[in-house]
Length: 137
Image 1 (cartoon, rainbow, N blue to C red):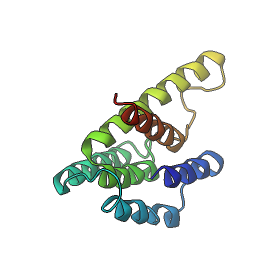
Image 2: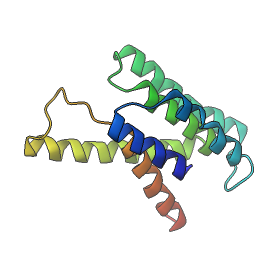
Image 3: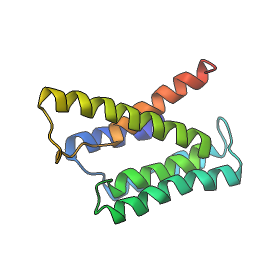
Image 4: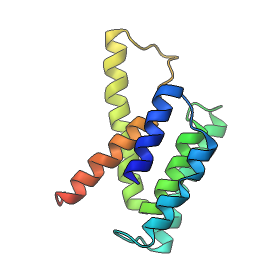
């Protein structure tokens, strides 16, 4: 999952979009999650998927203030890791995005209409969550 998110984050950072083929490649970490590492229950996976589906709806309603690609990646992440991990990853990602945005606004490098790629923050949130989990936090 980490490598997949890293590739997506790099693509989003430099191209400001995520190709559908890379999103489709998300099937690989989802399938692998059924055999490797912690195995969330089917209900937990569906609830994790729901996080991404809610963000897809938010993307539609907000005229893509949240990108469809970001929401699709959270659907994949939710299916692979379950609700609890996806909620933590999303919360950490949003906190990191907030910290970055406030800092860049204060420095004058962003304005209220600036678009910021979210996948690098999702990747960072995933990595930090894995460290917290490994450390017993």
